[in-house]
Length: 160
Length: 390
Image 1 (cartoon, each protein chain N blue to C red):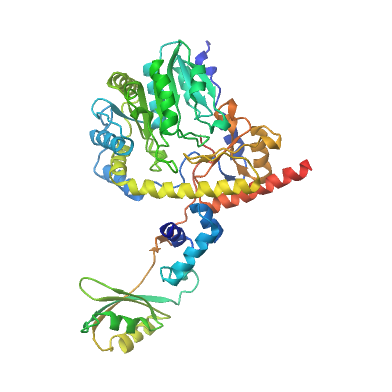
Image 2: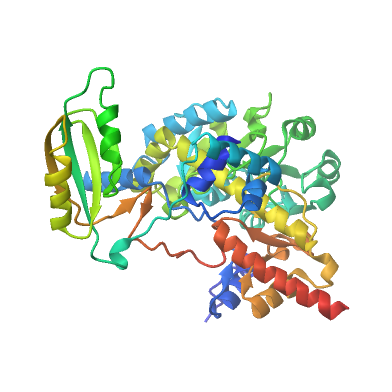
């Protein structure tokens, strides 16, 4: 049941508990209890809305920063990753395999602001060896959802 | 000038769906629940494979019976999913949709006057195809209380000395009815004893909810008397690619391929390459779509329950077939009024046989949001009807 619920709300967090229960053939109470348990376990970490900010506010600038760090004895990358993720400017932090260590996605109101954050805060942190900043130009798809394509039903209205 | 037309063709009634289609297409802002095809696009990796075959210049004919790779994959798939053993070299062919295969099988097997048992309600093409092949359709009216399954008794009553073929349309369009192993077993005994053949249209085989589909051809003694028909339209959301297949004993298959060779040549090559990809890499797509259909099915059943509309629970295809007899209207009247008053298009049950009277076919090949909107309108329509009655 857990996976069935998660798959449903992964793509549509607006589904009501009643609808979920009907769709997976469970009782409303059971679904409610399962969701509450998953919230408590941090399986469900939050409910966000996928917004195409380009359509509302062009002031938002997003950058993907490749960060190389020196891992620390005992903590590996965790301690430095946690320090980085506390900044409000930071949207996402991932530990990577390959040519660099952390992917840090940063939001700002201008390129200047983002550049300032990187040069003053991020690059100067202890154990950060180097940063490489890439500004996002356009989003096409996020969280499995196309931000551009409108899918119209072009099927004939009645077919056998 | 002489009459240019064939009397046989003139006598065939136009499809009941056509009439309703014309009515719907004149209206604006219609929400349709009348579509007999998936709402999903063909999975991208399958489309991409089709495009790649075009890029590679694979724009030639294939052999009459279809690409060797595809027939091999079809037979592997049938083995893996339904315990069927077919030799791809002599017992399989690729057709233009399941519909062509139905026509071929009937034409290859019927002599004038042979009777073909057709359980109804069913897909619209069996009856005219039987007539065109000089056969005589014998209709069995399936009953709601039997969940629109064919019973042994009904079959026995329909069999005469002239019976040659039984058409098995399960999982069923329009009722959503399925037949389970033990229910099929009862029929198998009769079929073998009476020495009749079966054309089993299993195009919705991947879309069953609960138990897996069982093919009638998998029973001992049945493969040699069954033409199995399936295709890519429903399972892989590939309706527009027009691709199906048939598997049958060599003696029947040879003659089917002969007709296909002269009438069609071969199924579209691009579609065939895409279908190879579908069978090799498409299991997850099928599963994903089946789960979504099942959720919508439950959603619809619950809404009908809340509305107080009787509806037997269908376990196959993507249709529900609610009973609307209590509103005192014919299927046609009900569907027409629903369309005029609330702009929701459904298909009257009578489009699928006279015994569909008193029922409407509702498709759930739509998103939940769409179904919700449409059913809110159906609810409003029914509330109005109830008020008028009081």
